Amino acid sequence: MKPIIIGISAAFFFAFTFVFNASMDATGGSWIWSAVLRYIFMVPFLVAIVLTRKNLKPLLAEMKRAPLAWLLWSFIGFGLFYMPLCFAAAYSPGWLIAGSWQITIIAGSLIAPFFLTTIYTSNGPILKREKIPYRGLLFSLIILLGVIIMQIESAQKISVEVFMLGFLPVLIACFAYPLGNRKMMELCDGRLDAYQRVLGMTLASLPFWFILAIYGISTVGFPSINQSLQSLIVAVSSGVIATVLFFKATDLVRKDMKKLAAVEATQSLEVLFALAGEIIILSIALPSLTSWAGIIIVMLGMIIHSQASIKESTSLPEEIIHN
Image (cartoon, rainbow, N blue to C red; front, side):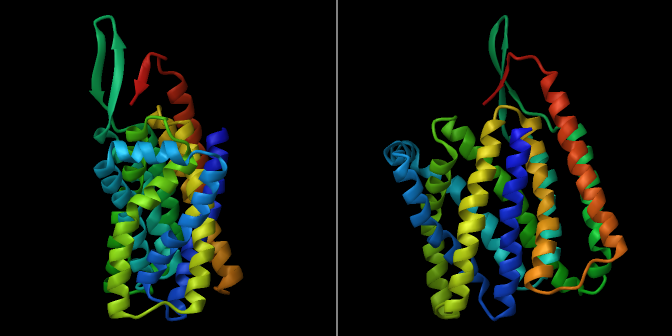
């Protein structure tokens, strides 16, 4: 149950992304700087945390061991995750992005075949490709059903063009984030803690953010002070606190794909937290009864999915070890 609670806490802080990205876009801020500034601002905070824990040297040694892999999976897990989300904020309201982001629940299950399982038999260890957890995927669909119901009324008020520009980038992000996260867990194999891994991925993704920053300077100029301050809030809440919490939760269950899918399912609560944030900060209207029905279905789906995944995983033989 501990990984689930940590996952819910991460969802709360992740919701700041949707609220403040919507706020920055409403005040004329560019999506480019919303993306770049978050990761640049994350660096000093994460360096301070890792230095305090005296874990910087092991991290640098681990990154030196496989630099290309770090660059690749950090670009996918951070670059192809956050840049599309910020781009979508320029074309879609925060509620739609938060709702579309829940596809990551299904994405986390669908990418299972990209990983191998070590099964120890009487003839020795055998590598076997992971299978899609169809039972957990079924409960994920319940969560998505709630999300769809919750967004029906608002979705009818936007054009197809706005929907596509807001949806397709988020779809890319939905697959990139869990793929990059899991591949980095596989690469590190428990040798780094959550703080080290987040810092390492942030540092490895910096070349991409610097290139994007140069593009931003040449096209939209430098960011405003207001956007910089809001980006700092997002960096601390979503970039540092939420990411570390989420990575900590996934680290606790990294050897069990079914429990891992359950932890990722907790991120469905971002819709609820984002909705509350937009009501409080951006003064949006209260949701309709139909939307509240969707919210209830999302919560029930998350609980059912998590419990079913835990029960199913505890029934597996102990000799099955996921790499």
